[in-house]
Amino acid sequence: MTLRPGELGRESVLEVFGVATKLGLTSFGGPIAHLGYFQREYVDRRRWLDLATYADLVALCQFLPGPASSQLGIAIGARRAGTAGALAAWLGFTMPSAIALTIFGILTTSVDVSAAGWVHGLKLAAVAVVAQAVWAMARSLTPDWPRRALALAAAALALAWPVAISQLIIIAAGAVAGRFLLHAPPASVGAPEASPVSRRTGLLCLAAFGALLVGLPLLGGVGGQGVAFVDAFYRAGALVFGGGHVVLPLLSASVVQPGWVTNDQFLAGYGATQAVPGPLFTFAAYLGTVSSFPPNGAAGAAIALVAIFLPSFLLIFGALPFWDWLRREVEFRRALAGTNAVVVGILLSALYTPVWTSAVTALPDVAVAAVALGLLASHRLPPIAVVALAALGGEVIAAAR
Image 1: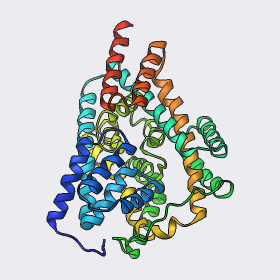
Image 2: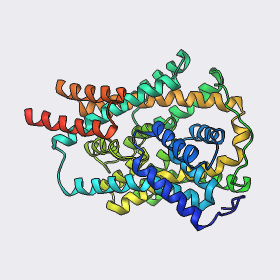
Image 3: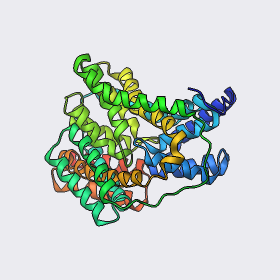
Image 4: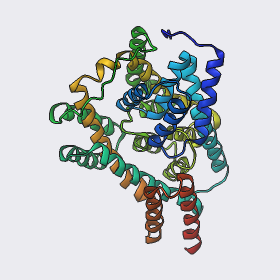
């Protein structure tokens, strides 16, 4: 991959890796909180870029599907130290939580914890986390009734047609509806910013992104479950709009329905993911670890991580050379508004099933989930403390039964 500024040397790559690792160890609170951590570290403290450039990169990453905070780190790493810097930024930010979740997965597969009270508590924590995400996203992405109507229609369709392909169709339909029915959100356009990636490289990355998105499902029919396993995580990383929590329904349909991961394992792991710093997409490491489809364990975690984050690299390097043009297109902003509205609906449907229906079976469950939601919404405790309290609540419920 040829970058215009050129590689800035080994010292810069190591510097990027060190700063990203610090963020990967300390960035609790989810994607929105991550943007605040990044601004303090990269803009205010180190001055690797100014606030206007930072805001421009944030806008780019929020327009693209995938994990916005991870993509932002990749883009900043690329600006600082080229291709190696992009990889170093991703590794540093991702590895701490990925390692923690891989260890958690290994420990839970060596012992039967399906009936443990604390596992039930983690599932209740997932109820609270997803409910908060739905509320926050709805306030931001569905501020008017046309977009709310799109979200409710998407939720109804996702519940009535609970298969992986339905989510792709709903997202595409949302883009079409937005293009023709919605008003374009205002563009935030600053001064043109030189891209560290050439247009030729950008086009190659976009072509690779599309080829894998279309080709992996076709190869899965002849290549067996191994290709289908990679496709499940690649597709989730390629089609998640609106924030890291939206990966929940996509991954649930992709790994629970084929029987690779049980629903109890899935929700317990999702709850545990809230207790670690870094990107929510490292949930894939846990799923790859506990999957019944080999390779699992650490090898499965590595495969799942690479597959789910590969679209982020391809999209960031593909979009950077064309961002100044793309963000000015009214039709694009309309389509994106429709897409964002329907992903709120998809996440709302996931809040009901499998999250609520699998975790909440009695009034004490409702109480624990409600307390956890209240603590998260009030910001009185960090997410890791809320998850720990929910796990304790699950133990209390189990002891009382």
